[in-house]
Amino acid sequence: MKSSDIGKIFEDKAVEFLKEKGYRILDRNFRTRTGEIDIVAKDKDTVVFVEVRYRKNLSFGFPEETVNRKKMKNILSTANRYISMKNFSDFNIRFDVIAIDEKDIRHIKNAFDMDCI
Image (tube, rainbow, N blue to C red; front, top):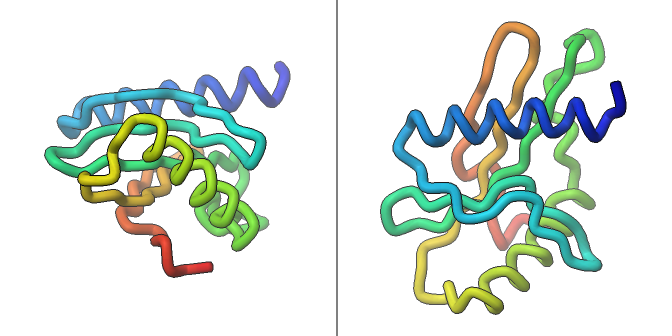
């Protein structure tokens, strides 16, 4: 199975997880030249940009630990473009990570923010 197929499977799991928690999914796999955002969702009055990370084996660390500074910078840049395109500048904005491994799904709210770079 290709890594893109595996990624889609776990992004689908993350979408279902968010829907069960009452989130409304606005977009998936939003791409610009600076990067991609896996899921854009709405949690009440907050627009949430979600990065989904999966690791089959935890011997090299947790999936959420793979969201490095460069990845955050790319997500922030892409989110700014999305906010501008959709006229979401009046909404609260949040950046979350959903980490998935063989045993668990962890939702890290406010994993980073616009000031982290």
